[in-house]
Length: 449
Image (cartoon, rainbow, N blue to C red; front, side, top):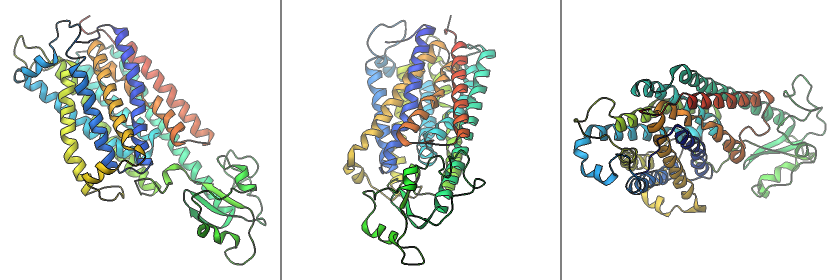
């Protein structure tokens, strides 16, 4: 059985897990943004999630060098002796099931750059404290808890960045509306005419950070020359643009302002911006609080922290614990998927299992499945690192918003041409997460050393 027994090896696994955990949310979010029903995506995710646990248990947990730990098949055959710890492992699976399900919806509401930091910070603040006491102070508290504080401050910084970005988008939209007439929404854009007789916006009303009368985030060519009609702009949609609202005089150049991705009509979730913000924050924090119990539960199942086993009986290995963990996850995924198919939330239509089987449009199922594979592999690495160097230190992987934010900016154009204030808060968030990772890594100690 493959294990890690050095601090350096554990930290290396945790860093890889951090990168993977920063990637899976973007993959999951990609399917929803392209229009795949969230119930379909979630079951795709669950299959990939369980598959990794099964493969790892039958390979890494069964073959190779063993340092006194029991093999996976042997532990399955003696499951009755370890029933209390199996209960903790499956309970951990229930907690992360609820947490990941909530995060899926929070991602659809808030985006990667705000949902992931809120979720991860709740996991660290609660989970790290519990793991510290379960490990009997294995990690250095004077270093560990300042790292936890950095996680908390990083979440606040990420929230402030999101707030200032939203304010900037609102000012930009208002400025565009004030510059045009005969406007209406076409696809993902606001299309209208620039009024040639309208004076430039006064400096007092122009958005902060503008150059002349062109605000940050609005292309000068879009305003002065106008865009050609996009493929989504039908002749009927554009027919009215040659007239003013109150006359037949031919209008000025076309002005076309593309909205943020969250307003795109092909998205599965149909809510207003304020509804997204309100429900997204509630769901992200609640799911993070519940999901924070998954790491302490795994800690108990692999170390018998409460002395539930008979003398001489070994606790579960990481691979066996994670197998039972994912069994509970997959078991709950079936009724949960049925429920959200029949009673969909967030403005989605009803669907069926037959629709899931036939829904292969553009291969969107693959992104949900790959997301499950990625996060499940990250969990295995985190638990291996935690078993070697302390589960409290292993929570450094929750600094994954360092990676998730990059994906949000690159893939989904979040914070594209935002304000300088929003960018400043983003930089602050990055620095705090980096500090948190360093502190938690330094606090690690080899178990039994």
